[in-house]
Image (cartoon, rainbow over all chains, first blue to last red; front, side, top):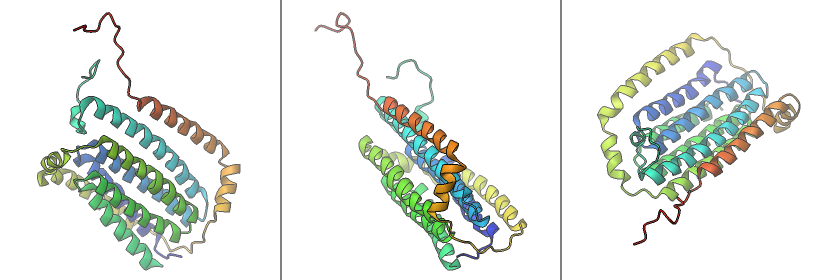
Length: 105
Length: 173
């Protein structure tokens, strides 16, 4: 197996998390914002896996399974909300959602 | 085995950068699937074959496919011009600077830590399964609640409601 030190192993999820964060800050298309959130979730789970592997416990993998369940639920509800948003506003621009309205037009 | 780790991590980083800087959403998701496959390789060589398989099956195989279905269902046509307008280089500078500062802080923290290399053993799915059924049984039940909430919420929120107008209020022209 690998002999990369643990702290060097942790560089990869950090870099991926920051890439997801920059993507979330820059993009205005709401699909891309969801994709960036997915990248961040995945990198957080990666930290758990690496920790579990380095302490020789299965707890890291179990935490990743729970994170996977959270991600799946969140993505499905987020995409359903995007469908509603597109149905009412006819655009995927996140800046279109800047008003509180009673009835969408 | 180290070379596989470094190679797979370079592929993951490059494909993730390509995923967030593209203009086409489908291309971005395909790049992200490549990144997830590279991360799955890393999980496998770290001694976690169960989550390596789960990452491919669930994350790349179900969640990303759900994304693709929704994008194809929305059928946006005009987005390419909009995206070119939104993604000017001046829009990228400030968040990239913030990300770079965080990256410098993170790399500093990483190099301050002092860890020896560990000999990793592969943790079999049987161990994970035993742990899930004995120690973390409550967590499994609670994530079942969460998935139920996700199902009900996605069904309810994804419905197109027809607006019903009383016939006396309708225009009779």
